[in-house]
Image (cartoon, rainbow, N blue to C red; front, top):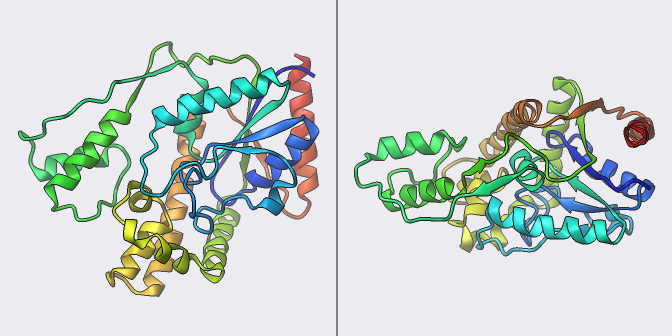
Amino acid sequence: MISMIIVISGPTAVGKTKLSVELAKIFNGEVINADSMQFYKNLNIGTAKVTEEEKNGIPHHLFDIKEVWEDFSIYDYQKIGREVIQELLKKGKTPIIVGGSALYIKSLLYDFKFKEEEKKDYSSLSNEEIIKKINEYGVSEIKDAKNRRRIERLLEKLENDTYRNTKDDKLIYEDVIFIGLTTDRDTLYDKINKRVDKMMEDGLIPEVEKVYKYKEAKSLQTGIGYKEVIKYLDNEITLDECVDLIKKNSRHYAKRQYTFLRHQLPVTWFNVNYDDFEKTILQVKEYILNFCKK
């Protein structure tokens, strides 16, 4: 079999997990996580993390590798992710990278170099100017935005995580196949809303309560589903407002995922057949086989 890397991406709730497992069976593959929240232990319900049953015996990598209070930058992900890819390729396995965090995927597969972390001096900036810079990184909600130390630390973290692409979007691997799953907006939003309702039924609030003492951690301050429940536990919003906010933020995130993927990665899109997912699997399989013949 031709050595290749398969990437499966797309918005939340679209069916990436199921497709990845089925393709792993077909192409002798193992799954590598590319979801920025699924690296963390004990964050299962809110991240819709793959279960042992769903894995169906397929090895999965870079899940549950960090505690919720630990930082895990894109630089860290790039380093360990590339090591996993090399190990799999040496074993004759097909790395199947799965997730909706498109920037993580891009940092893993393209010739990116990262800036060395440095201590920043923001003394010349007002709080409003710092917040404006934070917003430019796509962070719209900032916990305790009046806390000068906190917003400085957040901006420093964001700036130190910033990458620069050194070779004009040059892939560092040959034969990378980018698969995107999609559906119409109404169907996607309905699936997102139902997924949130299911998360609440499955115990999202008790899950957050177990890690609540770490609520200042970046993972909980930025993760959709977690930051909203923390607001509820802090009595800032009602339970109904919490659920509605998770749904709204999830829908907005899905829209941003589409935008990034369509502009930054050479994705071939497949409309998901939810009535007969086997047809979607077959369609993607045929596309990959034809790609390998080229």
